[in-house]
Length: 277
Image 1 (tube, rainbow, N blue to C red):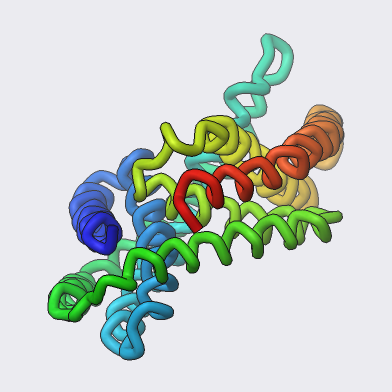
Image 2: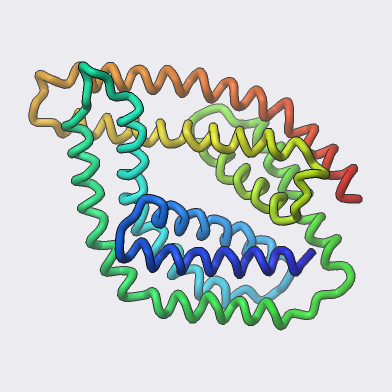
């Protein structure tokens, strides 16, 4: 089982650098997105390795570069996602063209800093990332490693389930979403979807939570756009759009959380039964 997680770590590291190369040249929507997703998965795996092995200094050294690149691309990714969302709300009477131009402006502002940073640190990021992979390959893994991995995953399921009970506002839902995505990925690496059928349902919920989060970010950008607009007389459609999105999100978050609270207990029982702990 350790080999599966090591292979996943190598795969995600390779994914990061292949997508980084594309993103640097094209600022493509998919490349920026896949690059940032890979960083999140690398982080999830590294947290497990940190518990399995004592020395993580090599990871921390390399990950600081990945984190910087991840953050520098955030504005670009936000602009891409916001543009896609706004296009879904467009009607014959409301094209939201001024808002779309605003998002393009935000993207252009972010691109310059991203390109400069990547050129500056990508070689160091590559070397330290693959040095850490070589370190992981050299670790002596004993017969208890699989059990320790499963105990770690089980602990994470309990943490996410416990946190779900105290979710009550946007901030806590966002924190839950991060934890939830991590456990989805860790379980998926084991290729035990067949053993734990509920994972398929939970992956759908993860996507719904992602859309919920994107709409929250959109309302923040809408507020900034409205506050900074020079044309105060023609903002009614944007006020209405913001009101609509907030209403949609309130209803969606309640439905998603109700579903998850019902299903997470089943996930825990299924994991215990089928993984053998």
